Image (cartoon, rainbow, N blue to C red; front, side, top):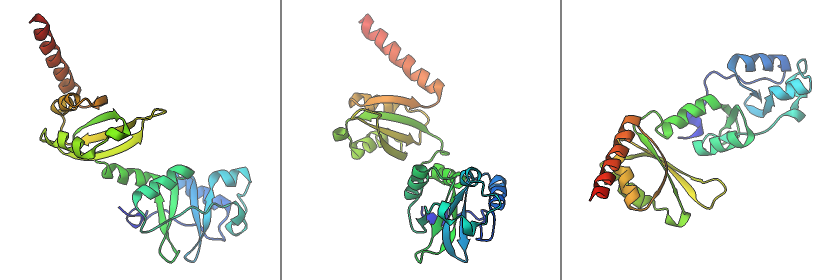
Length: 221
């Protein structure tokens, strides 16, 4: 998914003749904290509500606020991951999008970005989630996929992150099955460390009840 596919159709751009109060009014209407300033199709910069309040720029036109503007942007052919990265790093409520000629084409809002990203990682799809902790050298996407697919399931999304201050990584799987008991048992058999499981609680309880019964039978032997 590329930046040009995420552009908002409703957020306006400020002109150089607009003042800080107009910017604040629009920010309040659209519930955002930033607005782009554009001259014709040239991107001038990004003004924030904090800057306007802190410097008392309510009656100052944007042409006189250039030194107080930020210049973050993405290009229309950049991937959604890159868009998320810059928005997160700079804590923006939106990010301007420029074409290959560096001309302004619109903005991507955090709200729209969140909805699209949710679709990308299959948040709305029915299924369960398994979180694994493992050493980086032990990470094998092929084996993880084999374990999931060996239980007649499919991986809807997968992402890897560093596990806090440790040297381990965390692998989060979204799987297209609500009952993950078979997958969990297979991961356990392959000595995977399962940090957490998110599935129907009744199904999870049944799985642990079954394990408890098997343990009791083993101890009785």
